Image 1 (tube, one colour):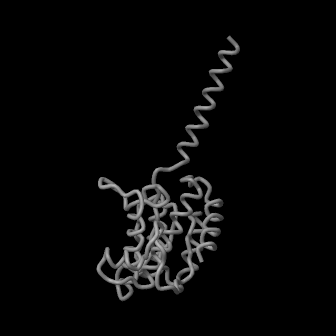
Image 2 (cartoon, one colour):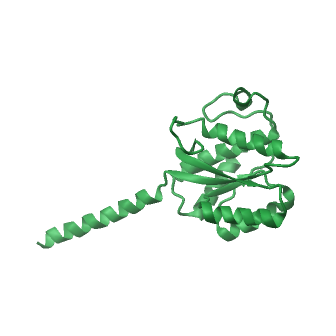
Image 3 (tube, rainbow, N blue to C red):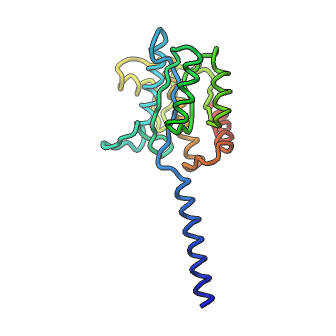
Length: 203
């Protein structure tokens, strides 16, 4: 009787442990993409967004997919925030997006004039921010091989600018980070460490 009771409790504990592990490993994640989506810099924001969507289509895409594609083996949803607005309104939009949409990452084309304000706000809400150096090359290697510039031109019928290269690089970093953490978004501090390692290695 005691042995049966012990086995029952042991199995119950194992079920709870594995259930918690399964819950921690997400099937999807959301990215807040901050960029100029209107105004004089709209083309840069649009090209960066198109490049991210191209990357999200690169692997594991299927016809009935309701997300924006796949990165890191998971469904990815891209939530857009337009930088072409007053700083106070932009910071409010970012905070609203983080809170309402349960964003796991923030990245994009953030103007230098407001970059520090955005970083400070994200630190307050403990959301990892992927900040990459300005792109200086004219092409990148796709995650599955081949030329990014050629793939982008075939897809959108015009050549990518530096903002498009930046957008693709952000997506490539996201893919590596999500794979490295195995879809577990429960520890922002660990995620930030992984982001730093991936960004440093990607330079």
